[in-house]
Structures are given as structure tokens and as C-alpha cells.
Picture 1 (cartoon, rainbow, N blue to C red):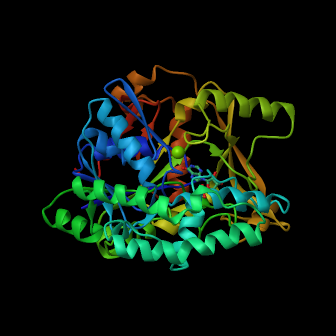
Picture 2 (picture 1 turned 30 degrees about the vertical axis):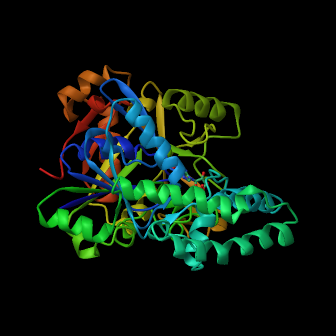
Length: 442
Ligand code: IMP
Ligand code: MG
């Protein structure tokens, strides 16, 4: 059986914590898209682990798989694995032979292209990890895949074809100098060494076959999405999006498991109790403008530690956006919800929610298809009574009914609007600070 974990908003909903929670009962945790643009923090045995590629389950002895839908920087991957080993862990990580390799020139191009877009306000505020350029090459049929790192002649041919292209792009189109990141021989040596290490440590797999075999042996598989629905390349706020599909369809194409397999399992949408955003683009429920809103944003940012895991950038903050969530619930077909960071809002007199949007003298309850139209939406707010601070550890121990009444009303509103039950509630960063109502593997 599979449990798929999907971000319902703009990324950073706390998926890592939920994967960690449900991954406990799992045997395998597989990521299906994205790369080291993701960042998740897992607290285990009092130690904090910040990971961007290694699936969170791998620190608890589960098999971690990076599916074919991922783009993987082998340097980051090995650095992360080595750091975990130094801390006494032995993570078992497998990489799909069909996954694409982030090459040094991809990172360079990420920076150059973002800069070029700045004058037209089209930059997405990327994480600079080369994600977009790598997916571009995948779709452009000139990418390098992990399987190629194992086959020196094929790898050499790929580089011989693609690198001159990239060089020309940098020099002739952008009028810049192409540096060492465009040196075929140096790249060949370095990346062949990664290929050898992958072979020595028996790390590469046919992800679809590998996962299917595990499922047939009645093993439990978590499919872990990175980023979130509103920065999905198809369903997000284009062009301020990432270049992959965090929505549940990506769990099929990004692993090699069929929709009927994924659909027999559960699909849990992870929601942060408010909004946070790294990167550019409109955000109708953003807390900004007047002094009071800015102070509130500042307060939530500090309470929630809303600074990017990967880039350290302060995140923009806003109220929960229900049209965004309705869109997410439909696009992925959520069977359950996990609502995180409820503790962060504690102590406020009032909590607001963007229930719908005013647009062109009418009301809409889901996101418009274009980002420009979304930017014209004025939220129609609903106000909820705040809830007090609590001893969240005790609340988590005592369960759902121990939550303050205001918090429960808030959760029930979300659940009713999305016609989906709340499976879990996060009231703190530690795993013990979660209320678990449904364990999908049990
Ligand atoms: P990229 O994925 O680095 O290409 O960045 C594209 C957009 O997605 C930018 O707006 C990033 O800020 C955003 N983004 C990428 N990864 C994450 C994430 O893990 N959490 C939140 N936002 C992300
Ligand atoms: Mg994150």
C-alpha cells in the first residue's frame, strides 16, 4: 500500500514532519519530484537533521528512494549522506536510473536566467539549485540521467552534445563568459567518479520495478512530494512556480507506479494553518501594507520560524487561503488532511481566513487559471476567534479533544470546506507534538 504526501499550498507546509510521522510504519519512503530546492527538518532522538535530498525516512532506517521524477545533484546527495554517516547513521538511499542529473552548468544558468527575467518582473525567486534548467533539458531531450553516469561512453556523448549548446547560450545569448562549469573533461571526470560510487554502493534502481516489488511483498511505501500545489508547473501560479508536479499525479509519473496503485492508497494533503511563501508573485491573503498587518506578519514569522530551510530567506506570510486549498484538494484528490503549525497562531485575538475571492463584482471560491487574475482577487475574509497558548506536548498526548475550542472550530471549518477528514494536527516541531487521529497504514 502507498500513502502519498502532498503539499497543499506553496511548499514548506511541514511535509517532512508528516512523512516522518507516517513513515514510522513504512518500509520505504520515495520522493517523486524536485531536488535540493526542497528542505525538510526532522527531529530524531533530540537531534535536528536538515535534509534536502535524502528522504526523511532514511534517518530512521527506512529505505529512501529518489524517483525518476526527481532531479538530483550527486554532490549534494553524497555530502548529505556523508554528513549523516559522520553522525552515526547509515542511510539506505537509492536513486532512479531514470532520474536526471543536475550538472554544474544548470546551476549557473539558473542564476543567469533569473537575472535576465528581473527587468520584466518574471523571476520566480528560485532557490538557485539548477532545478528549472535541469527539467528544461529533460523535456528538451538533452538531459543527463543517472543511468548515463554508469555508462562512460554514453555519458561522454551526452556531454559532447549538450555542453557546446550551453556554452553558446551563455556566451552568445547572455553575453557572459562560460567558466569551468562548462568544461567537458573536468565534468566527465568528476561525474564519472560519482557514477562509480553509485555503483560501488549499489545505489541505482529501476524505481518503478523496485517499488512494485516492495508493494507486492506487502511492504508499506510513502510517496513523498516536495514543494506544494500552488507552485506546481501545471496547477500553480505560473510562471512563479517550480518546474515539476508536486500534485499527486506526479507520484505516478515520478516513480513508475500506476495511478491505480497510487489511488488504492491514501493521499494526504499537508496544510500549514496560515500561508508562507518564499519567492515572488501575487499573494492575495498576504499580511502586508499597513503597520498592523506587517507587525502580525513579523510575529507569525518569528513564532513559526518562517525562514527558508534552503536559502535562509525570510518568508512572506499570509492568512489561510481556502480557494487555494479547494483547488489543491481537487487537483490531488486528498483522502485526508494534516494541518500543521496550529500552535503558531495561538495567542492571537482573532484569526482570519480568506474564505473566497471577490473578482469582477462576483465571488469565486477557487483559484483563477491565470496568475494575473489571481493577483486581482480580493479575499473575502471569515474571522475566527483566537485560541490561547497551551502546553502543546500535553495537548498532543491527550489528543484532539484537548485542543482549545477555537482551534477545533478552525480545523472543522477546513475539513468541512474541503470535504476531507483531518488525519493529523501539528502543534509543535517535534514528532511528539502531533495529534494523530488516523494512521493510514494501520
Ligand atoms: P526552484 O524550484 O528553485 O526552481 O524555484 C522556483 C520557485 O519555487 C521559487 O519561487 C521558489 O522559492 C519555490 N520553491 C522551490 N522549492 C521550494 C520549497 O521547497 N519550498 C517552498 N518554495 C520552494
Ligand atoms: Mg521546505
